[in-house]
Image (cartoon, rainbow, N blue to C red; front, side, top):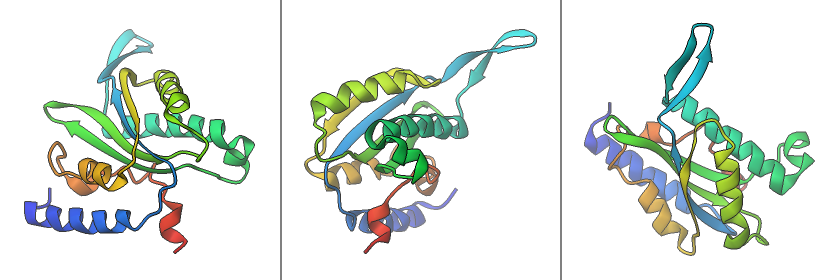
Length: 172
């Protein structure tokens, strides 16, 4: 685990890097995860406890569904993806959950986005019924919130690099 001073430096650099990105239709999303699911084994049913790797895989499952919904076959054929910043919070004494800043197509409003997120999240293996989605008119405020140090054992490890997709940062 890195020191608090080091985490503050990483946090500041991360915020500066992320604020340089362009967001056309940003949405702030909070996704809760089940902490335990029953798994069928050769010896019967056993509990399986959530870990960071399973959480990341579960989010990838959701993002694949959303990319397919919004980009159709181009998601698979040409790798078209939604811009997303995923941050995993919790651990130790707090439920693992995700905060996302996700850029949806300009034509998508909250009336379409909210039920889509709820439905698709509940179709994932670890998706839990409490989902929050809102339009993010001030994406810098949401970025500051999801990049806070509180509720993260290690700031750098909280950014889900496996599911991070920020094409606008690489095109400048």
